[in-house]
Structures are given as C-alpha cells and as structure tokens.
Length: 298
Image 1 (cartoon, rainbow, N blue to C red):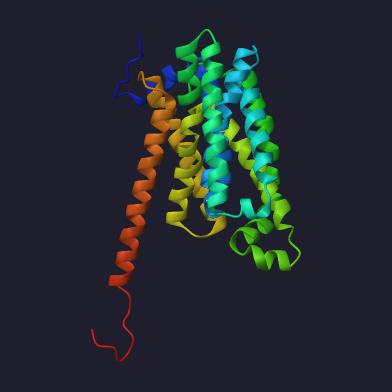
Image 2 (image 1 turned 180 degrees about the vertical axis):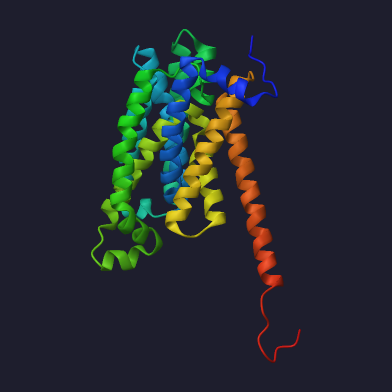
C-alpha cells in the first residue's frame, strides 16, 4: 500500500525521511544530479547527446549481467558504461567527428546490441519483471549505503577532473582547430570527457534507470543553455535544475506507484519547456524594446 500525500508538506517530508532507504535515495540522487548537471552541460555544448544516450543504454546489459552473476548492479553499470566510453573515444577521428553519419551508425549499432544483450540477461534472471522495471526505469527502494559510497567515490574525482579540464575542454568544444593549433591535445581532452560522460551515465542509471538517464543528462543542461550562455552560470543552473527535479521526482515516486524515472523525466521536460518559453519571451521583448537607430523610420 502506497503512502498518501497530504497538504501538510512538513509532515510529508518528516514521513519520507523517516525511512533509511529514502535517505539513501536522496543522498544518491543528489550526488548523481550534481554530476549529471555539470557533465550534461558540457555534453550538450559539444553536441554529443547521442553518445550520452548510448552510454546510458549500455548500462542496462551491464547491470543485468551483474545481477545474474550475483554482483551489485552498480558495478555492472560502471563497467559497461566506462568500457563503452573508452571504445567510443578510441574510434578513428573520421568516425568520431561530431555529426557524421558514420558515427551515428556505429552508435546506433552499439545501442541495438546493448538492448538485445540486456534483455537476454534479464530473461536469465529469476526476478524477470521487477528486475526489468528497476533496471530500465529506476527505483528508490533498493539504494544502499554502500551504493551511495560508491557513487560519491566516483563523483568526486569526476568533478575534479572536469574542473581541471574546464578551460581546454571548453576551448576544444567551441573551436577545436584553433585549440589544436595552440597546443591543446584535443583528442586526449575529448577522450577524457567521454570517460567522464560514461561515469556520469553509470551513476545516473542507478537512480533513473537506463532508459531515462537521457532526461537527467540532457534536459537540465538544455534548459540552462536556454537561460544563459555563460559557462560558469550555465553549469550552476544545470546542476540546480538537475538537483531540483531529482528531489521532486523522488518525493512524487514515494507517494505514488510510478517509478522515479518517470517523475524525474517529467519534471526535467517541464523545466526545459519553461526555459524555452522564457527565452522566446525575452527575445521577443528585446526585439520590441530595441532602440531604433537615428534616421531609420519606424
């Protein structure tokens, strides 16, 4: 029987936090949201959202295989996502260039195989239905203290490396030719970022499920890009939106029978729509109130 929400938000919050599994879920969700918001902002800037989606999908067979072997699913997520990230980073430059049809074909092939392998592993597992739902759409009930620790251990160096790579990565993302001419190791920087993206996808999968990682990685970042073009403020806004939608998603998932991935995706999509509408309104207002040049008729 699901708990029932009331209009007393303080009491609802007290009830939610009275359960250790919800405290663990909130801790894990916060860690994941911070990493996804920061990495996602750069992923959207680099136009590598399709690669991010692939890394999220391949986490599914990794977690399913780990479950079949009696290993914690989190280790399967990290092994599959990091391994695939290294494979994508090692692709020849012609296939790894953003927006090429060859890259799309390679990534699409990997996605198809990953989903098929994941379904095979899930079918071999005794708890087929619940295991499939949790792996694909996430759960708030199965997050342990050990899982939170693993996520934190993965998140801290990931964010530190992103901070160290920040300037050369931004330069290589906006103008790779000039960056390379100035001595920036563009290929190495791109490979390092792909590895960070794999870590972010693996961590996010454990909260939202493999199929809906994309929402937490892309929607907050896309909304932030709509609101500001400044890198520092953009990352901060992306992280803030990711944390907010994760907390809201967990709260609604606790008081409803629907998985957390659905709620996180819904709130993230709503934030993107609001930001897109706000940007359109600001652009329209800027055009209306733009001062006219002298001598130009109205």
